[in-house]
Every structure is written in structure tokens, then in C-alpha cells.
Image (tube, rainbow, N blue to C red; front, top):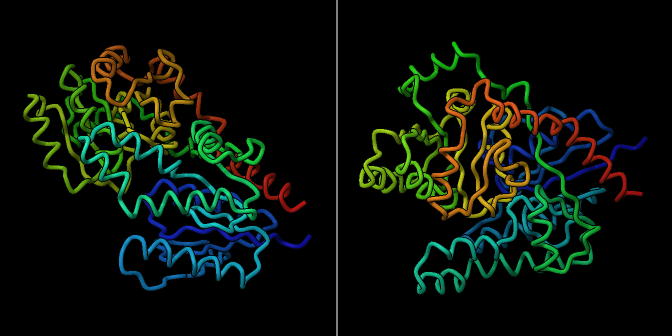
Length: 375
């Protein structure tokens, strides 16, 4: 059987990025199939399988719009020259066969962000040239006659695409991200105590973890405000250039001794294993991998109504769902979590929820989609 020549387009491969982790897991899972795996990228960081073919595509850029437009044009020219069987883009580029909507719908994110801005900043946001470019590129891609399929990582995004772009529902395929639940698993009691001592978290404290960079979008302000109304601790794993502002917020609310900033970490597993839950009141997020990782480690999750990961949460069973700005509701949900996730029913239910979503399952879903398109 002739190998299927698949090209995956991602402008910049960053090892800690959620979309990039989807790409790497998909490529690793697909590697045993009858496929020739190609990646079109401006910059590839990290290791690649020796059988993968990396096509560097790095045109000159003078700003954000130039960067996006230049890469789109160069990537499209490259895949047309190579005549791949399937082009799966993770960027908003018209002409691809498959678009993976890992970033959701840009207008929906802007509307959610507007909720925390003043009136004049809201107008400024929606009139911004870059955001207008992205929305136009999105429209051109979804209305392109070349588009055969859309992959979403949440039903939330599927519904938004149908409503905003009138894409046929049968063209949109919800394929949830994969998680290695053998790697991400709960610690035992001894490991948990050692990790808490190592990272200076009191052994008996109820400690939630917040994981993600880009604190505004991920909802750290709301998380700190909710924590301040409880006795719980919050461990923040990630980076943001405005970190000092969030430290000052914790200080002004009198909870600075219970909010711990760990910065960016190469390995997040130990931090999940010392925690009792994940708190992620994100303004808008299609489906952050951190939810799968936390649940695999036996952590109940509190997240928001505009997070696709909420589709895995059954309130009171394996976590809770609140509006991203509902501080009293969030604080109330924190109070309903088990005092310790380890050995709790809610933690066990969280882990059981994600067990079917293996890299092998993701591989089979993707391969079936490719076979359908080619036939």
C-alpha cells in the first residue's frame, strides 16, 4: 500500500505549547501507520523522529500581520509544490484540506476578553488591525472550497464554528486531545509529602494548582480572588511578564502567604502530584491539556463555562464549572472539594474520566479521518 503523504502545518513548534503537544503526540502515534509524516514550520525546537520530514519555511517578517501573512503564503506555496495527499493546518491558512481549530474562534476569545476591559479598551480591541486580520483569515479559510474537514478538540468550538461560519456539522470532527495516563498518575502518600516539603507547601494544607502562561487569559486574577475567600493555598506554575501585578494582588487581598509562584517548570508532573485540585478559571480556552494532565493525576478540576475542558467535568463528581468571573461561585466550589485529592472519590472519578483518551485512540481517530477523505 502506498504511504499517505501527510503534511502538518504549525508556524512555530514550542515544546511547552498545547497545540505543539497535540502535534507531537499525533505524529508519534501515527508514526507506525502507512504514512509519510511532514511538518511545515517556521521554527522547530526539540527533537524529531528520524523518519519525520521537517520543512523549514521562514520568510522575512516586519510585524505580527507580516509574520502571519508571510508564513501563510510561503507554507501554501510549499505544500502546493510538494503535492501532499493531505495538508492539515494548525494555522488559519486558506487552502488546507483539514484545519485543526486548536485555538478556537478568534472573535469568541475577543468577546470574552472584552468582559474584563473598559468600554474604550473594548472598542480598541475589536478595531485592532491584527485581530481584524486574524478574523478575516479565519473567514477565508472556513469558506474556502478546498476545506474538507475541521478537527475540534471540544464540542464548544464545533458549535461556535457552525454558528459563526455556517460550516456544515458533518464536516466538523471532535477529536479530544490525548493523555499519557501512565506518565501522569497520582503519587503515593510518601511521594506527596516529599514533594510538598521540597516546594515549601504545608503538609496539611489544601493546595490547588494553577498551570499556564498568559495569566490574563487563564484567569489568574479570578483564581487569586477566589483563593483569598478561603483557607486554601494556590500554587502557580507558569510565567507572565506581569507576574508582579498578581503578586501585589495577592498581597492586597491578604493571601500572599498562601499564593506560591513557581515560575515555568520543565516538568509539571511533580506539581500536580503534590496538589489537591486544579483551578483554571480561563476566560476562553478550547481545551487546555493541563486539564487532562491534572485529571490523570487524580485531581478534581474547577474550570469555566468557556473552557472546552468543562465537557469532561460533571459538577460534584469530578470537579465543578463556574463562570470565569464568578468569584463567590468559585470560592464555594473550592470549599466543596475534598480536603485531600489522594484516595478521594472525586479524584478517582477525575482519573477514570480521562482513561479512554490515549495516544493510540487519537491515532485511530485521525487515521480513520484521513482514510475517509482520501477515499
